[in-house]
Image (cartoon, rainbow, N blue to C red; front, side, top):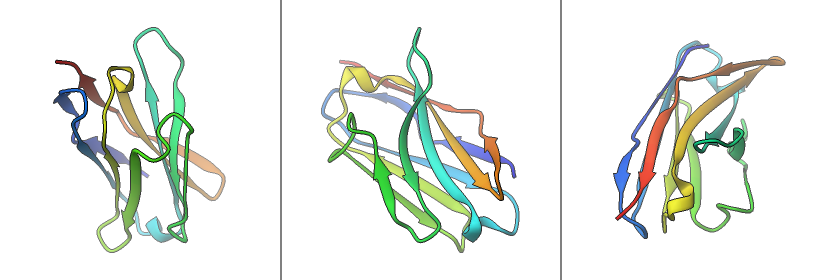
Amino acid sequence: VQLQASGGGLVQPGGSLRLSCAASGSNFSNTVMAWYRQAPGKQREWVATINTDAGRNYAESVQGRCAGSRDNAKNMVYLRMNGLKPEDTAVYYCKAVLWGYSYWGQGTLVTVSS
């Protein structure tokens, strides 16, 4: 599985952004997708999981501000982020888990600053 994340950029505090992640392969509907982020000088942390049944789980730090979704027909997963805060600044990565194997994309940078 190859992953390509996009949609990052510079956004002002309080703003919104939608991240996208394109996945290769023919088993996307069986693939659990997740978003992680890594802020400068910090460890990578889990943000959200979008399950194969489209069920979603979110980290407490983004709960109520983020909405994950997936489009199995397009092999895409999304993360809509609202009410962005400076502390959301990080490189955001998408991760795929298929049959016990994990795959990572290259990351997209989100900078929240005025």
